[in-house]
Image 1 (cartoon, rainbow, N blue to C red):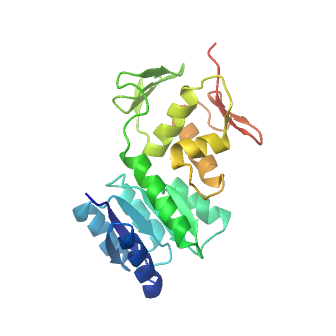
Image 2 (cartoon, helix red, strand yellow):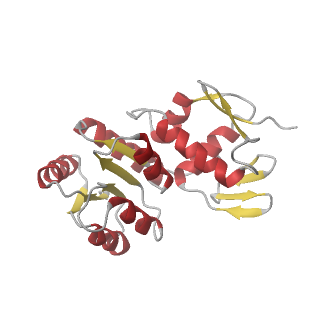
Image 3 (tube, rainbow, N blue to C red):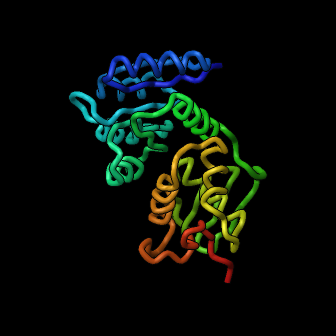
Length: 230
């Protein structure tokens, strides 16, 4: 069954070009230039992925993203001419899975779509009964469940995948490139900013003091490491 992509874009020529190229790849595509309509389509149409422009008439892209995240964990890729770091960070921290800046190559966009769909729809990496012990936390891979100091904590798919990747190599350095390949796919075109924002969001959910992490440690300039037992 073909995946359903929602394209939310107010530049008619760009929207049509994206639709054409997605349909050539076998995707079913719905497009709209209206933010409120996009929220309704996510609610009623259950797309598999959303491509979301930020500069929309009426309801802006960030508000659309907030409304989507209030009801759905569908993968969202922001596609925007806004390329400043604060805009990218804001989009990712609001729950976007990826961020593509305009202008972009269609090959890059299709690659990002494919990588995000694969991650969203693949099963757990390990055994269904895997319990990964992280000291203050336990990750139940089979049930896609995290408990932190005895409390259930919700993780979005990429946060879960990042934590799993780090826990499976507990005490060992995992490079940024390896994490990006494992979580976003080998053909990911982006820089490491997306990864770093996801790590920051993950720390906010598992660390006692996210500003002084004790579990997910930074190896400066290289990658990350989950703290050794002890």
